[in-house]
Image 1 (cartoon, rainbow, N blue to C red):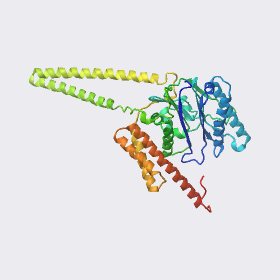
Image 2 (image 1 turned 90 degrees about the vertical axis):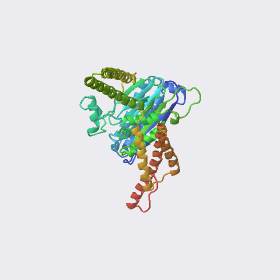
Image 3 (image 1 turned 60 degrees about the vertical axis):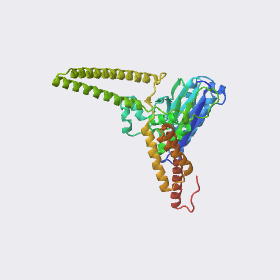
Image 4 (image 1 turned 120 degrees about the horizontal axis):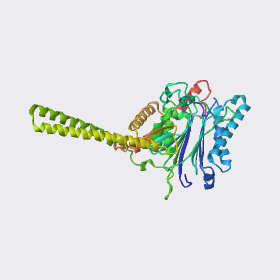
Amino acid sequence: MRWEHPVQFASQSDVGFRRRNNEDSISVRICKEQESWREHGHFFLVADGMGGHAVGELASKIASETVPHTFFKSKPGPVANSLKSAIEVANQAINERGMANREFMRMGTTCSSLCLCAEGAVIGHVGDSRVYRIRKNRIDQLTFDHSLQWELIRQGRMKPEDVYLNEPRNVITRSLGPEPTVKVDIEGPYPVMEGDQYVLCSDGLTSHLKDDEIGMITNYLGPSDACRLMINLANLRGGSDNISVIVVRVGELPGGNLSEERNPEDMPEPDLDLAKSYGEWFWLAGVWGASLMVATGIAMWILTKFDQGEFLAFGGMSLLVMLLVRKVFSLRESSRHEEYLDKSKTVEWKPYRSERLKFNMDFLQYLTTMESELQRAAMEEEWTIEWSSHNKIYYAAKEELEKKKYLNAFRDFSRAIDILMTGLHSYRKEMVHQARWKKGSSSPPADE
């Protein structure tokens, strides 16, 4: 990576629907000077605290402040070593704070950090918060979950497909704070390519969104819209934990003026693989047609002894053989292409998990349904909504959908959902205040 590569990013942290306070913390440091970038690089961090009450919040805050502070104060050298040392210093600081106060004992936090520097992408990681990389049509998980389930998978005692069928979930085996020392996973440095995107997130997101959904949202929306949609979906699917997301995109080397954020309207419509599905139907029609020629020719030859029947049978058989041979070669080339893609998806390293991405029409339909349900609830429960702004975006999205401008429709439906979710948050907050007032307060509580 070079200093001239522009970096777009967005970050957001949400308390979720079931927690009273946010125990997640986020830190972003973009270097403003080339010398600072050469020595350390751009820095991003997500920390998910644990310990109950304000204890987890304190632990994640210490991590989000101590790690970047220590990292950028370190002497120039290998970024991996500086990052590892900074995380170890944060672990010691959290542990000492916990030991000094009985109420804070055993407090801890996850810590997933990313540095984009001259050496490439360097990751420092402890816990089950994750770092993903989206490159073209693939999403790769670059961090190993320090959780009980992932350890059982590594030991061969559990299959990956059985993870969501087993309890307990989210039991982490490593974190910052509980012990005086901690083992820090360092991944990289790995080469960075133009267009690469990185997602750092707490398990409040990954508990509700699948990898391919995270990849599709990040790939087809700008960083700000992607953060908002992912958090909105996590909340709509339960919001069982705090949700924190950072989306980072490495832009192209400047050839002129740089736009501050990629505009989805400038992206070409995604390939929906429609030609492939039609090709399958044409192939089947050809096979059935050739088979019918063979059957008709044989019947005519047996019953009438006409040369036409022999000609049809021979011609149909030849056509059928040609179709079958072509299909075999097509499948072989397809498998070779798949093998090439699998090898080229991460030439530099092997990710812990990887999945192919494509524009999913079912997911777009899911968004349209979710938007309609939210809109109906907003009207019935009288949420405070900026209806003029919403309706302008909503009807534009419907028109784009009819014109088969799927990418623009995807973007606008996500923004319409965000407007409705803002109203839902206000409505929920008002309901909480009214419930507290009904319990015996002499006057309604002030807004928090």
